[in-house]
Image (cartoon, rainbow, N blue to C red):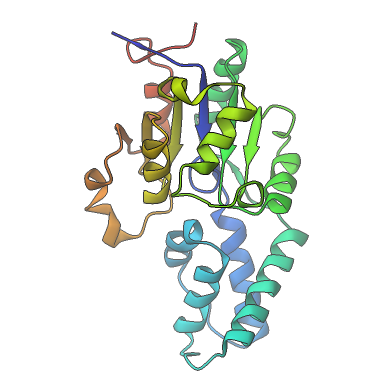
Length: 236
């Protein structure tokens, strides 16, 4: 029996949009400016979902910069964010097959949105550059709530903006590539889908089933197939 769905929510980086190439480029630029060696691309990708500080710390560790003060770390982080904002969408793109998912949802008048831990000023610029800002029905960022994922507050905020009562959370799917995404969705009562193709470190790959997602998709094509399967979900 298929499940009735009123809306689909996505995490942003590593779930709906592949932003890693831009972060790899920026870490490479910062490393070059300091006469350092850039970390391997694969290692940078694994840290994207952990945020700017994690990517900067990776760069510092890779170059044995272990005595950096908190103030210096914050300066590197701010430079990273400034460089990213200046060239926020050079190589970023929607993951393959997910454009079709968005198109089908829109054809069926099913709202889709984003709940992310990315700061709003960056999330809005990215969506505008990718011409998704007018299509996205709801965007919830850390700026909008007092507690970010894995707390369910951002999920509840999305429901409110979509005019969907919390008691109907089981009709809203949440897709993410981090354990905090799954925890937040489950805490809000939403069916959850783990995007295992996202930015997940190797040490976490073997524990994905323990995260408790209702579904695990290994590729964007798998996610496409699951979301558009008439046997699983009913958007009518």
